[in-house]
Length: 382
Image: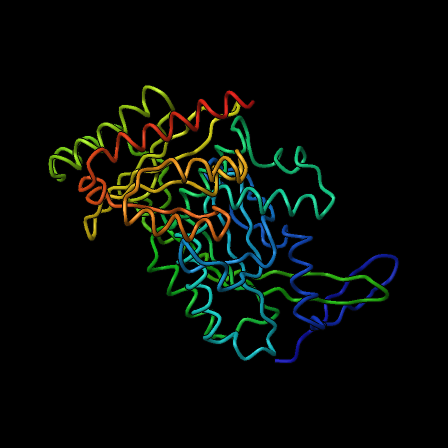
């Protein structure tokens, strides 16, 4: 069927003709400046969805030690802390049919693993500065009664749980891509997948009309409510139950010592992933700094302590992160990852299995000593 014009009736009748985007860069710039064209649906509390740009060309690493291997066109976030990943293609790009789906799944899988909250916060704030937008204004749309650190930690947890939106945006959506998006949306319980067709109509001068059509909402509505985003957080009782029932004596002791110390000296926050996890904020330099996360993975069963060096570097600077890394105990599996972090500027999440800590006498005591030095040293220099 021939594309029909859109008619605007004012003092006279003006016909707006369908017009392709001249370049992909033009298309991407439009979405970055006007994310309202992607604001369909609502937040968990029923308020209208409003997407806020985190970054264009967001780097996606494929390991905790590597730099970006891929570049996502746009990363947005909403006030519920749900990330929205956007890939943009014009209909003339043959990759729109199948290759773009593989790209998006790569970005989602690796972003969920390797985008710490501190990196997302830094990217968002750098984008605001580059766009000449005040942080106060930008955060006014997102925070509510939370601090920026609490908000970005919530975003990090959403990613880890797979709670995100994936948007394929094009000026024309092929039937193959529409079918794939709707299939993925039906099958993925935590992640929403949409294909958004954004048609442009041009009139006299700079006058334009943008008409979005969203494919996949029927599949979203059909998802079981029990499979949708849950804000239920892991509790200390949840952690203790798994630790008691599953861990060997020495890993059990280490996990309990870490959680007890965090409860006494810091602030524990339960994760929202499918597996039990808790993150810890410690006071340093007059702020609450995320320092580590204990995750008790289900399948396969694995217990792992990860250090939030991206957040530590963001809050306390490279010198603070370096001092903390140097003061951690010499556990072989952790030392290898820390060496890579030194080369990368301490921006990742180096982790160590509890079994490796259990095999190293005094390891947990060394970690606690390093945390004390982190808190006391930063307080003294503040």
